[in-house]
Every structure is written in structure tokens, then in C-alpha cells.
Image 1 (tube, helix red, strand yellow):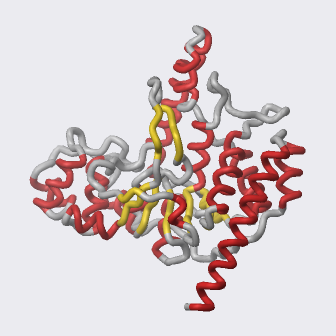
Image 2: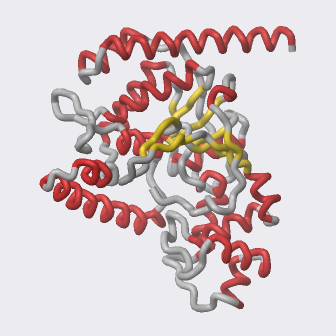
Length: 346
């Protein structure tokens, strides 16, 4: 996943998931599933599979992470990508090439017995196949967790839910969500915890962090529209290379000096090349394709249904699955009781 490189510019507030009890989060589903596919693997880099050979790493991540969040009183809704904008074709091809190169390096490292190196390359080869999205939706239905099929970009729809107040946050690893206008982006929701740095015997604690759009704009001293222009200058999924030689800090300086992308291109960057007219890229962010005909309902999980699906069909360990669902159910009941009390006394 690429996304726009804003990490050195945006202010971030570190939080613990435990403090988000009672809140709702719209999660970019594909972003989360790719994280699960990359991280949940055997020591040699092989993903988890059922007896038929189908990959199940994404289902493992979806079950245990969603159950953990529900146990803490956090309501999740997963938003699945629809058809990507035509402008994304170059970026999709670039990602496929990276996966193909990583696959060759993975097989070579495996043949040479370099297991740690093999695992690192394996994490870069993840592909989200159609059956994975369908299995994920089936599991969410059984868990009582709502999901939305976006007409186009999942991140845009998740940002829209947060803008409309249907959810408190949207979650993604990428910063594109704030270019789509999300008031509150939360990162590291699906991968928080102890993680090993690639190729190093070092572990780090990955913690959730919140990015506020208003705070970002005030800190940078620019408008939302200027933030989108800044993103286009440094590179987005719709113009992956950005403008050659322009990094985030230089882009910010230019935006503040000239006010808009057009004026920068007229005066300072006359030779800048874009795959399409920059206004078309801007439109994807400012007026994305989203839907309003959604209904968010959280239900208690169908425990026997989940067990039948994951344990009978996908070879999961029944004891672990039941324990996760029991904790999830207890957390949901506790949150519901607390919410009822707050409404009563409020």
C-alpha cells in the first residue's frame, strides 16, 4: 500500500484502544485484510491455510482483532472497496510488479534456507483474492458486525461515514483518509501490539494514533483544498510519482508561498509532469463516489454459526474461537448496559 506520504507533516496523538470504549470506527477493510495477510504467517512466510489449501490468515486477523475491539466496547464497521477510479491503474500495475519481484526473492531466500529474509519478502507478496473478501463478509455477518460495500474507494466511504457522524473515527494505515476529508483518522487499529522490525532482532510497540484534520490544517497553516494540492505534489495513488524532487516539506513551502497547485505550476514548476490533468486527481478527493444508503446495526454474534464456518470449514481451533466470541459478547453486553445508564442519567 502506498498512500500519500504525510507522516512527517501531520500532528499525531497517541492513544490506547482501551480509552475508545463506546466509540465507533469505520475500518478500510482491504487495508486491514492486507495487514492480516502480511503479518499472520508461519516462520517460513507461508500464510495460514485450510485443508483445501485456501488462505485463512485474513479470517484469523478479522476474528481475533474484531473480537478484541468489541471486548473493549469499540464498535467496528468494515468498508470494502468497489471499482477503483480509472486514474489508479498505474498504481495498481506498480503494486503488482512489486509483488512479482518479491515472490521471486521469497522463493530464492527459501531455497537458500534464509527463513527470516524469506518471511520479509513473503509479507510483500500478499494478494487479496475474490474469495477472501467474500469469506470476510460472511464472517462479519455471523459475528454481527456491519459492513458496507463502497461504490469506489473504501477509504473515501469510511471518511464519509465519519464526516456524516455515523462513526466517530475512520481507520486506515494510509493518510489518504484525511485527503478524503475524514475529520478523525486513527492508525494502527488493526496492527497495534508488539511487532518485530524487518531484518532486525528488535521489537517495537505499535500504538494507535489519531490524526485530526482540523488540527493538521491549523498546524500547517493551510486550507483543506490546499492539503489536497499538497498531496498531489508529493504523490497519491492517482499520480504515484508526484513531482520529481518535491518532498512533503518543499510541497508545503510552495503551497504556502503560492496558494494553489495551478499557481505553483505557472511559476515554479513549469516542467512538472502529471499522468492526467491535476484537476481530475483533485476531484477524486474533493468529490469521491460514496453512498448514503447504508444501515449500521451491531448484533450479538451467532456463536454456533461462526464455529461451523471457521472450525468445520476452515479448520480453526474451536476452543480458541469460542473463547474469542465469549469475550466479544461479554464486551458488547457491558457496553450496551453502560450506554443505557449514560442515556438514563444524561
